[in-house]
Length: 420
Ligand SMILES: *Cc1c(COP(=O)(O)O)cnc(C)c1O
Image (cartoon, rainbow, N blue to C red; front, side, top):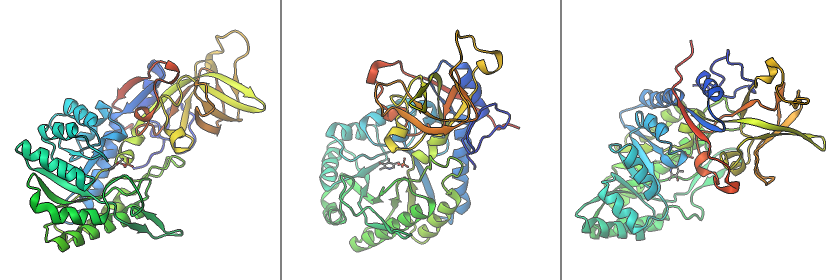
């Protein structure tokens, strides 16, 4: 599982470690740009490797993998992911309807910080298998709605559990003020009230305490959550049937090569789950889908401004808000345009930059429309295709599409096989 350039014969100019597949390059050359290109073959192999890590580490306690749909709800991506995961975690009535439309048979867990009555009713009639309940108030409302519908909703209590990760600077995550989940004391109150709540069955605990964790930090969080859940159910004489330790497995946009260490995480999770005899679930989003999406566009203008170089691309952060939202430079690769080999068809001198740092921006009328700063490439020319990598998660679906009313990007699915 590496995220490096998969096909060295591809004539893409990519800073080391930027993942580009041959199928994506071929699609970017053919497609109308800007376009999102999703390599479902790449995604399929990545998910298979993640699954293998858990299969190999298993000690008898099953770890079930859910995918957090909010990372990327693209139907093609979802269909590929669904082939590998136990189910999908949705965080709204909209995501629930979307999943039921495109993948009607896939098990669904319903999370999200404040669910409306109509969303809960829709979930009950869609026979959602699991509810991640975020407050005692929500538990009582779900109970009432479920009883009225003649159902029993299976529930995990989402708890804001204090967890400290040891390290150079001990990092505290969870246990801090947050609109997500309930405080431990509220979970205790919910457990005491459960005999009156015949419309819900509490199976265990859910926690999603942080994101961007490396494997060690994620394992420490999972161990803390599992231990807390075991203590909680013991105190209340409940049988612990399930714990969901959340997502948040890190993706390092500054170093596209190294991936989250799934085998190490899986081993520690399996060890922590041994002896609990309950189902353990995780629900990553970003770390599953990020690496299999590319945002492909073209350099329209290569400008010099007061000594700096700017490549103004078609599209921008209204299609790919990830770098602006997270404050990083989106990793990129460049496919030379035809001018490099056949000479410019444009009148006048061709705009190009050789070896200078170039800042890639979009064409929105705001200085915040920056995709990557000071990128050094051997050469860049107007007309070149730029492939922004790691654009498969929290990318198009978190972007402010309507700002300036530019056209939407195309969406292209490719199924690249392993290159020989
Ligand atoms: C967003 C979210 C996830 C997925 O987080 P990633 O960082 O994408 O892995 C999982 N569970 C909950 C409750 C979330 O809000």
